[in-house]
Structure formats: C-alpha cells, structure tokens
Amino acid sequence: QSVLTQPPSASGSPGQSVTISCTGSGSDLPNYNFVSWYRQYPGKAPQLIIYDVTQRPSGVPDRFSGSRSDNTASLTVSGLQAEDEADYYCSSYAGRNNYVVFGGGTKLTVL
Amino acid sequence: QVQLQESGPGLVKPSETLSLTCSVSGGSIGNYYWTWIRQPPGKGPEWIGYVHSIGSDNYQSTNYNPSLEGRVSMSVDPTKNQISLKLSSVTAADTAVYFCARQPAGDWLYDIWGRGMLVIVSS
Image (cartoon, rainbow over all chains, first blue to last red; front, side, top):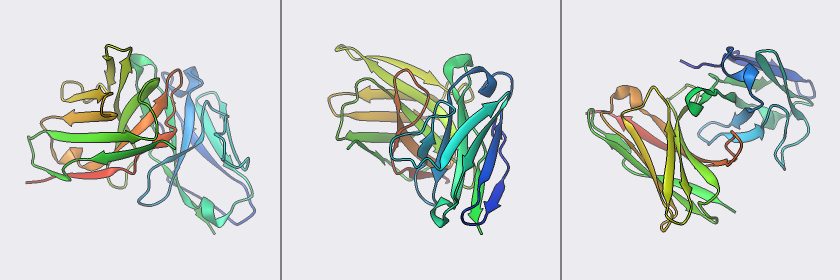
C-alpha cells in the first residue's frame, strides 16, 4: 500500500496542460524539500523528471514543472505531447529511519 | 555514461533467499548511495534500502525499509563496482521487478536506474 496518494489516471489533449497531484501525510512530503517525480514507460525503468520539489534535471523539457502546497505536491505537464503518455510516480523523503516513500502512480493518457 | 545492470535468478522458491547483483559501469561507486527499489506488477515502487561505501577501508553504511528489516541486507564491492542485495525468507509478496538506482550524496533522488529484473517467487 503506497504512502503517497495519487489519482490513478489523468488525461488531456495535445497542447493542453495537465496537473497530477501527490498527497502525503504530516511526516513526509510537507516536512522536507525532497519531493521527486518519475516518468515510466511500460517495461522500462523510471526516469527522474523533477527533484527537490521544483528542480528539473538537465535534458528534461521546461514543459514539466513541480510545486507543493501544504501536504500536496503537484506535477504539471504543459503543451502535452504524445510522448508524455506514461505512468508518473511521486516520491518523498520520509525522515524517520531515513527512508523514502512512493506514490501508487498516475497513468497519463494523451487523447 | 554511467550504466547499471541487475543480474541474478529470476525464479526463487518460497522461504529461500533472493540474491541480486547490480553492476556499475562507466563510473565510480564512491560518493553515491546505491539503492534497491522494487515494483510489484501493476503497482508503485517500494524503497528497499541503500548502501554507501565510505573511505578507503570500505566502511559500509546501510539503511533499510523498516517493513523489510531483518530480512534484507546490502553490500558494496568497490573492487568489482558491484552492489548486492539479499532478501531472505521470501514469499509470493516479494514477487516484483527489482531495480538498482543511484542516489547522489546529500539528496534524495534517483538519477540513474538499472533496467530492472523481474524476480518471481514460486515453487
């Protein structure tokens, strides 16, 4: 059972924007600036697209952006493209015992 | 370019020990935390833990998911650029794709992942 809660699905048309939420508890996501997002294509490994809540690794388009408000982090994908269709997972440092928690994932469909 | 590759048996019997190796190529093991993450079919990832090699005498620091504490162990072999995972007393609930991943020191993110290896627990 995932500790971070994500909607199971999201969708949008090409060119539109879509936002995926990730809700934590009082002991993880709200307390640390270590929220990251990963994109995963079927049968492939996850790929880091956002780290430290808002930072993008080099090579990730600025169409991807991250934010956080209270106990909810969000990933926004602007200018949707067909290649954005994938599963997206959030992750957060949880502090106690120095471990990490993930969300259950959101399947993004480009209509 | 750093690459990670998991290897080991793809089928393990219940109650036995799952053993996997992650081989690191194109870079050094130092200055990173090496993490194992697993993903049951159709579910989200689960953090298993990390191992970190410190100094020339290879002192190793580990931290494991409390839900697996007592069954899991990890180690680093800097001479072979390999990280190992052992998970004992496995059950069907341990069936998953197992990934090794690199975590830079000082941050909590995974910037490089192996391709993953499906391990099925079944008799």
